[in-house]
Length: 457
Ligand SMILES: Nc1ncnc2c1ncn2[C@@H]1O[C@H](COP(=O)(O)OP(=O)(O)OP(=O)(O)O)[C@@H](O)[C@H]1O
Ligand SMILES: [Mg+2]
Image (cartoon, rainbow, N blue to C red; front, side, top):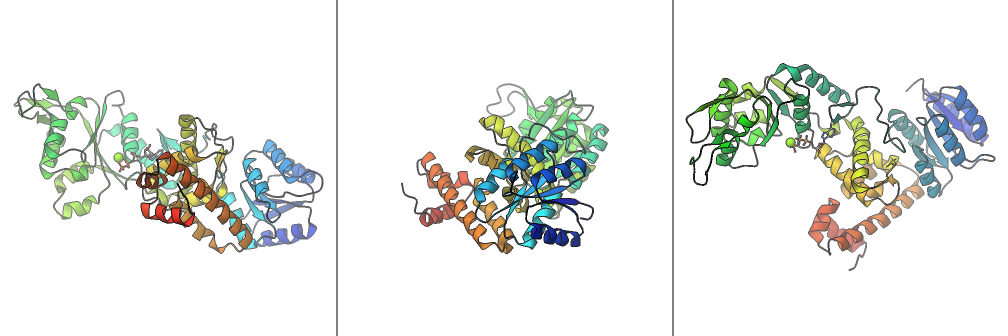
C-alpha cells in the first residue's frame, strides 16, 4: 500500500506526530495539519488519498471541514476521529460522506485495517453518487454489473462468442446471473432482433415440457383441441435458452440432441418435419460432470451444448463487486419504493462483503430490497441487514479492543432488531412463519428472539 498519501488533521500535536510516524512505518506517506483550515489548503494543493479528520478542533470543526473537503473532492475518503461515546457525531459524519470513523483513544490495529479498507474500496459510502454511474473501467456489460477480474473475463468471453452463433453452456451456482448472461449473449448477437425464448426445463413434467418445446398437432393427446407451436418454432430466427437442463429427462434430452444435430423435429402427434434456425443457450446449476457419471445426463448432449462454456463465479469469490451491485440495487429499489436512500454505512458494507452469499446476486438483491423497505433514515446501517449477515460480521470485528464502542453498537443493534421484529410481527398479524421468512431467519431463531427481547402481542 505504498505511495498512498494520508493527511492527518488534528489539533493534538502528540497525536499528529505519533500517528504520522506509525503510518510512515507502514509505508504510507503522510501530511499533517493542526487546523481544518490548514488541512483544506493542503487538500487543494496536493494529491491526498485519504484524510484522517478530528471532529473536535478549535476554529472550524470537523463536520464543517468534512463538508468543505467533499466540495473540493467528493471522491476523497475521510475517516473521522471522534471522542469516546460520540457515536451520533460519527453517524452524522457518515451521512455527510465520511467513509468510516474511529473513536479516541483508538486502537492502531483497528485504525490501520480501516485505512486499508478505505483505500481499497472507494465505493463504501455512496452518498449522492447513485445517479452518476462511473464509466471508467468496464463495470458493466449489457445489464450485468461487476468489475472484478472474474466478471471482466465473463464480459470478454461474451463479447468474443456472442456473434459466433455457437451453442453456449452456462454453469454456476443459483443466482449468479446465468440467465442475464444468456440474455447478454442474445442481445450482442446477430440474432438480437429475433426472439429470445426461455424454457425452464425443471418446472414442467416430461410430457408437458416436450409439448412446450416442440408443440403439438390437434388431437395429439386428450385436450389438444388445436395445433400449437412449440418454443423451438417460436424461437426461429432467434435464441432459445434452455434453463436448468440438468433436470431434463433422458428422453427429452434425446430429442433436444436431435434438434441440435439436425435442426429439425416433429410436433407431438405430427408427421411433418419442421426445420428451424435457432441458437441454443443452456444453463444449469448442478454438477453436470457428476450427472453424466451417474447416467442422468447424456454425454453426447453435453458435448453438443458445451461448445463454449461460461463458468459464472460465485459472488463470494468476487467481493469487490458487492459495493457496485449494492449501489445499483439500492438505486433500483429507491425508485420502486419511493425512497431516498443515499448509501450504505461502512459497517454494513463490511458485513455485506464478508458474508458468503449462498444465494449469490439474487440473495444480495433481495436483501437490498428488504433493507431499502425497512430503512427509515438515509443510510443503510448494519441494523437493516438480516441476522445471518450481521452474525458473520460481528465475528469479524471481534478483535476490536474498544469494548465500550462495541457495547454501544451491540445495544443499538438489539434495540433496532427488536423494533424490526415487532413491526414485522404486527405486519403479518403475528404469523411467525411468515415473519421469519420475511426477515430471512428461521422460525426457531425468531422464537428465541421474541423470548430474548420479551416481545409481546
Ligand atoms: N452481474 C449482475 N448484475 C446485475 N444483476 C445481476 C447480476 N447477476 C445476477 N443479477 C440479478 O440476480 C438475479 C438472479 O440472476 P439470474 O436469474 O440471472 O441468475 P441464475 O444464475 O439464472 O439463477 P438460477 O440458477 O437460480 O436460475 C436476477 O434478479 C438478476 O437480475
Ligand atoms: Mg436462472
